[in-house]
Image 1 (cartoon, rainbow, N blue to C red):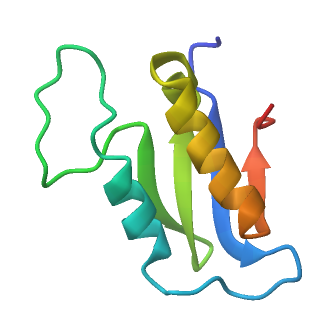
Image 2 (cartoon, one colour; image 1 turned 30 degrees about the vertical axis):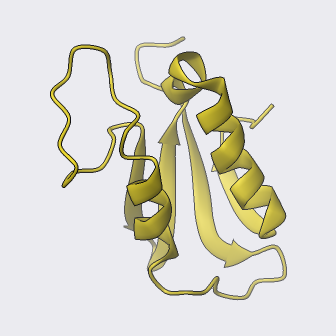
Length: 97
């Protein structure tokens, strides 16, 4: 892995170009994934995981997923990839595998 962590970005826009609903989908997804944290880090139920973070990019709600999530929990990685695929969401960044 390079010095910069690789990222997968799940965009809140469908493959057909429509906005994904509900409008708080990114926060909900990141909230579900909040338990996945680096070993030894003090987690709080009130913060997002550093591996799955909601962001607004170019005016579109997105979730930025750090590839290190795949190393600590392959099932969690598969969950976020399946979420994007099942909802026909656009993705960018590194390949999902």
